[in-house]
Image (cartoon, rainbow, N blue to C red; front, side, top):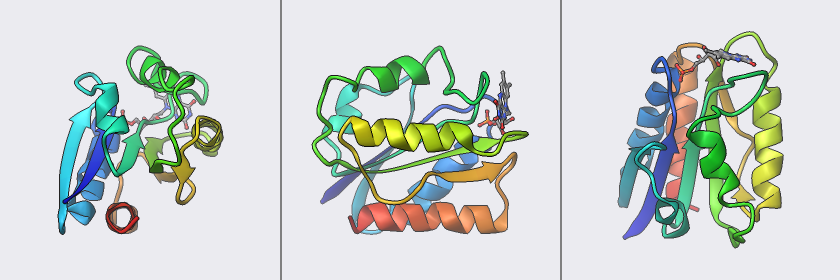
Length: 142
Ligand SMILES: Cc1cc2nc3c(=O)[nH]c(=O)nc-3n(C[C@H](O)[C@H](O)[C@H](O)COP(=O)(O)O)c2cc1C
């Protein structure tokens, strides 16, 4: 059975709601692991057939510094070997710059970014949540 990992960080729960919707979309015929970055290991990424990673825009258009940034940096010198991947996250006042940079960074690290990172303004609502589920389906079929 195909293994999908969904790793996320969320401070106030918005990105967590997105992660749960991605997980819902991926459920059919897949073994889904939904885990916070605090609990995740590198193997959750390396051993999965396809991966979604979620983090809101923090700092000044940056990844969350304490857990997500070092986790992502740990893949810099490991070739992700065309791992199918989609990023997602919530934001507030920005224009999604953190997500565009994150997509480019993961491509440099060797990920196969299947589509541009999904961003939701603050609390994800109807259409945001259906897009999250579509991401899950896409990863399941990758
Ligand atoms: C310390 C901090 C820094 C932030 N920096 C940005 C930012 O640079 N750009 C932006 O669009 N939103 C920024 N935000 C807003 C968050 O991205 C937004 O509140 C998001 O919904 C939080 O997601 P979460 O509930 O998953 O933690 C920041 C929020 C905090 C607390």
